[in-house]
Length: 105
Image (tube, rainbow, N blue to C red; front, side, top):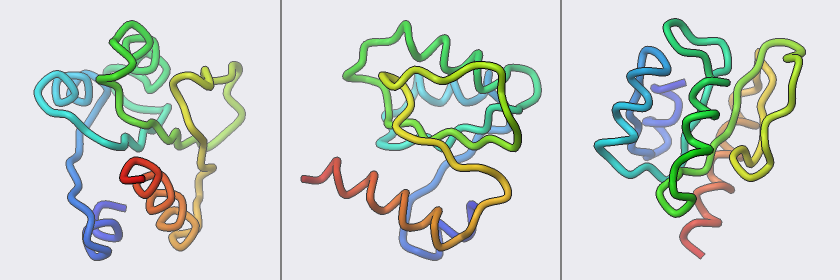
């Protein structure tokens, strides 16, 4: 996914787990976060719980990746959409581009 987005001219950063993702969010401002719900150390659900406590103006747009049927729904205030795995690369690019274009309008 990283390579796909970079090849399409996007500046991309990565985190290995939820703890690292939250550390990066504390250091940098991001326009968009692609969040896998199933991560080691701290799950995507836990990341969302922490994001819910942050100032909404500091939160990035969040797209959630999911492989299965999670037992709960993500808050519409936090998550702008979800992408089921496995995902279509063209669909991913279209969604990311659309999300980023709404920020520049």
